[in-house]
Image (cartoon, rainbow, N blue to C red; front, side):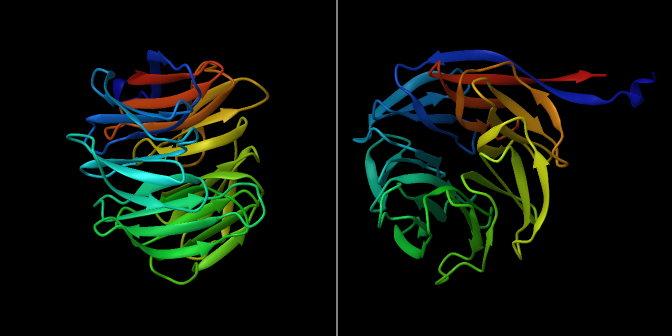
Length: 305
């Protein structure tokens, strides 16, 4: 075969495994590639220097359920019912975002101007809401009450549109500051994650498939079968999405192309993948797992075939 006709496939190798004493809940990578943050049941936010995976700071969050973590340009947001903003210099608290019940997810736009949060627990009259925030003033821009826990959310790079997905199967989308979502589409119950991809929204959960929706109308365009249930979706680069799946007990990390085809699958990494993130250059995948409780780092290589 002529060299110009060789096709490259994506390949990653596990290079680092950091054991955790308690279950890790959330993971996020900073846009500048310098930091990695992870939260866990021991009420801690651990901050790593991404280049070396050296732990540089450990912050007490005051909650055993810190399900949400995300970076702004100069800070990290992490916590449970309250997301504290910690500056990336002295790691002092400087501002907060608050829900009445557990915050399950947080995402920030590229300019660090706005954030979206989703909350809820499985009790009557719980605060199941999707909220958007001005990160300059920490003022709430909008609050959309939803019928069940909002497990996943995302915000466009320019901060003009947000999406939320719920336990009972709603996918809702609209503009920050609006009194209600632009559209709401029922799909399947137990949706955990949503991701903007161009003019599409990808959503995944316990249904062993990813639903692809039009971001302007909410129409379901197609369903992409997956090996198992999906806890979180993350953009690896412009062409690929990374996710963790669980089928029975084995859990694995997958990289999908834009058509939903798996172009790389890891070895078994535990019982459940709780979260995934990627370095801004797409060279690394970060994952947190349970049984065993661990933070995993995969590095990318290109293989010709």
